[in-house]
Image (cartoon, rainbow, N blue to C red):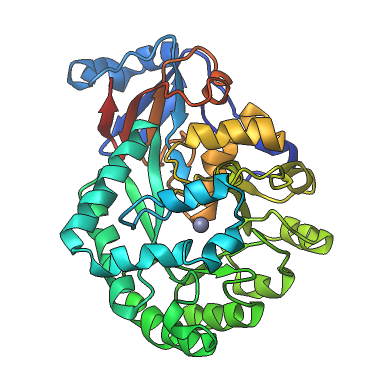
Length: 408
Ligand SMILES: [Zn+2]
C-alpha cells in the first residue's frame, strides 16, 4: 500500500483511498524507504540488478504489506491491571462511581509513585515489543499515573529509556493533568499551578516530552484549567493535545488557537465544533477500545466526523482502566463494526492520520520514498481481512526504521 503525497491529513472520501499496488516491491536502505513500485519494475531497475546479491529480499507474496501502524494514543507507564474496577463495572458500577469509590485513575498512582524506574522500564519495553507484534511501529506514550512532579518526570524518563531499547519510534507526552490527585481535591487550582509552573518547564527543559495532554472533562479538568495548561505548554515550546468529550461535551473551538495536534475520544461533540474542526488540521482521534471495554452502547460518531471533513485517526488508548489492549487491528475492527468505518478508512485512520495526529506525517504513516522504513506484513490475501478476523493476530512480520522487530 502506498499513499500519494498530500498537504494535509486524510479527510472525507480521501480517507478510503489506499493507493493499493498489487504485486508490489518496496526497497529500503538505511532505515528509509527508497522506492516503491511493481515487482516487475524493481527487477528491471539497473541499480537493483547490480546490487541484488547484497540486498536482503523478503518474500511477501500472497500477503498484505501496510505502513506500520501509528498508535497515537497510549498510556503504557503503569504497574498493575485494574481487576477490581473490571469486576465492579461488570456488576453495574459507572466510570464516575468507580472513581468515587477509590478506583479509576487514582488507584494506579501509588504503584507508579513507589515503583523502581528499572521495573517500569522493563514493563514499557515489554509493551512496545508486544505492540510491534501486532504491526505497530510508532507509539505515543503518555505519563499520567504519577501526578507528582517527581513521578511524572520519572515516568517520562522511563518512556525515554524504554524507547531507546526499541527499534520503533516513541513520541513522549506529559499528561500531568490526567486527574486531580486526592491531595489536591477541592483545590485543583493549586495542582494546575504545579503542572504549569513545575512539570511543564522541567519536561520541556530536559526535552522529555513532545506534547502536553490534558484530560478535559467532568471529574477531571475544566476548560479554563485546560486553557491555562495549554498556555504554559505554548510558552515552553511544547505542542498540545487533549482528551475531549469522553464523558460530556466541551466546546472545542476556543482551543483551536493553540493548534492542538489532536482531540481524543470525541464521543460528545457540538455540531459547530465539527464544522470548525473540519477547517483545522487538528485530528479527531477515536479510541473505540475504551467504549468496548467500558461496555458502552454508544461509540463516537465517526461517520458524522468523516463526512463533515474532519481528519479522523484511530488509536488503542492502551491503559489499565478503560482500554487494556495493544492491538491496532482490534481498534480497527471495532471502528468497522461499531462506528461504520470501512476497512479502508480504518487502515488510513490507523496509519497516515495517526501520523498526522503526532505531527510525524513527513516520516510516518505511508509507504513512500523518503519516509521511514516502517512496514507491517499480514498473512492474509486481502487487507479487509485484518479488521475482519477480530481478536486474532495475522501480523507475520514488522519492520521498524528498517529493523525487523517481529518475524514469524
Ligand atoms: Zn487516554
